[in-house]
View 1 (cartoon, rainbow, N blue to C red):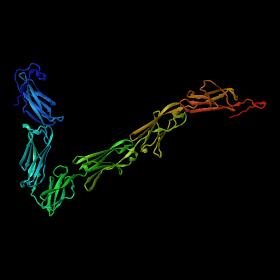
View 2 (view 1 turned 30 degrees about the vertical axis):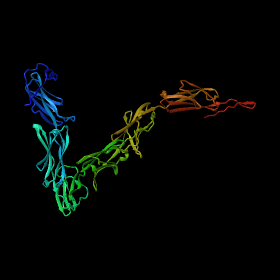
View 3 (view 1 turned 135 degrees about the horizontal axis):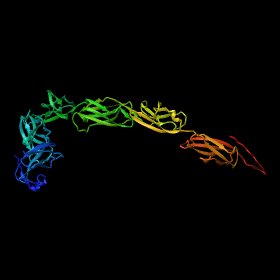
View 4 (view 1 turned 90 degrees about the vertical axis):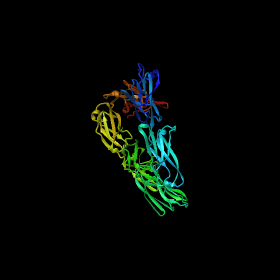
Amino acid sequence: MALGMPRLSLVTFCMFGIYCAGASEEPCYGNVGDREVYAPYGSWALLNCTHNCTKVDWETRLIQKNRTKGPGWVSVEVKVGGYDIWRASDISCTVLSGREAVDNYITVIPYEIPRLVTLDMEDMLEEGKSYNVTCTVHGVAPIQNLRVTMLRGKEEIYNKTFKDDSRVGNITEPVTYQITAERSDNMEDFSCQATLALGTAIGNVTVPSANVPVRTFGASEEPCYGNIGDREVYAPFGDWTPLNCTHNCTLAAWESRLTKRNITKGPGWVSVEVGVGVTENEWGTSNISCTVLSGGEAVDNYVTVIPYKIPRLVTLDMEDMLEEGKSYIITCTVHGVAPIQNLRVTILRGKEEIYNKTFKDDSRVGNITEAVTYQITAERSDNMEDFSCQATLALGTVPGNKVRSSNIPVRTFGLPQAPYFNNTHWIKIGTKDTLSCVMPNASPPDNVTLTMLFDNTRLSVNKTKMADGTVEGRATIPPEYLLSINTYQARCKAELLGLSSEDSVDIHIYEPANINLTLSNTEVLLGETIRVSCVLTNEHPDQYSVVIGLNGEDVCEDPKWDCNVTVKGTSPVANVTCKAFHKRNQRITYVTQQSVPVIGKYLLKGNYRQMQKFHIYI
């Protein structure tokens, strides 16, 4: 039974919020069970404390949740580790016993079972020669609870513990031991194991390495050689690959951790079939050696066996309707390929390669599905092109194996400009007129829809496609709108495959000016004044400004009554004009003109005067 010890005075105990008044004088106890609790790093550990006290609570710096109490017990869950904290932490079930705070401590220890244990050693041993055997424990905590054992068959040949080690955390630990090869080692399986002691509740957890079968040989004095051909061999994953070694030695054998079968020997050669991924899902490269005994030394002729997987499928994902000028992502996915370092992904537009990506510096190992993305900006030239991608896997001297995706035929569309009205904005009252809306440079023009409205009245549109792809819509203005002066809004909306653009203009219905020009004289002397009257007789004369002119020069603007005009200059004719300008559009102008003969003065010739009168009529 784990009983606590007195810790604090009553006053100090009150500071922790457990006791503040009316404490019992009777002694009591709390019981937390095991003093050490092992829990997986990053998990939540459930702790329970039984007691016969009136005041009890858990005290710790650890993150807590689910604090629960019942008659004679209190429980809590605490976070083990987190924030990369691997050290053991104390938590106390604190009770008030005889006016004293008594702590019942538990030490919570994070642990990590090794994810892998590997043994590294030569598997062809020359008798009498020393070799290093290395056992690596990958990812273990706490290391102080670790024991590493090396075995020869079932015989333990070496043990190492780490109880005095001060390191904390998830540790990968290599342990090395030196052996001297003996003939009795021949055909033995060497291995190692990591044992993690996790208290009485969990016990010991053991993780073994794979076995390394060992061959031994005696020394020979004659030098010889072995030849294995290519140093790199690409082998289909999940299948068997034949290898052959030629030699002139008395002893030659294939040595590898790979699974072997059909080992065959003949004069000057030895062959084997190795399984790549036939028993384990191991995608890493592996070395296999044709080991020969030459001049008393074991000579390794290594072949690197590289598993490969031709992609089972290559797919291209992209939009097939592209808006011109907009950016789109193209994704080429290679489904199931190895080794990725030998892969090249190519994205094509028709036969043009627009993007390549290789992975020679990629560190990943295994059967990988890889997505490659590339951004394009849609252009009109992309229309009707087939986009595709392909995966090329280079396998040594063998030409690259290409797997191609299906084609995606692409259409482009766009409204790069807004439509515009191509007609006058001022229409004379009572006349028939047509609105023209032009949509230039749309693609495809056949899919353009034009909608035209006049004063929110939808018009019937006659659509025409020009040779350059321009689309024009024409619509007749309803005649009832042309009977009186007014201003209306005309709108034209172009739509294409979800895109839209529009233009609007004001259409003004105006009344023409009727001018009544009268002169006080039918002829005039030079320097004499005539009275000019210019009157607008149309229904809305206030729409216009009036200017009276003489011989091209404005002399009266907007006269309220008659205008007196003095004839100047030497012209035989005085041209009197009345111009009416529309106040909102001065390009709308009406002019009426009358010509008045100008009678000249006497002409002096020599010593006499002659009076000459001339008339010019227009």
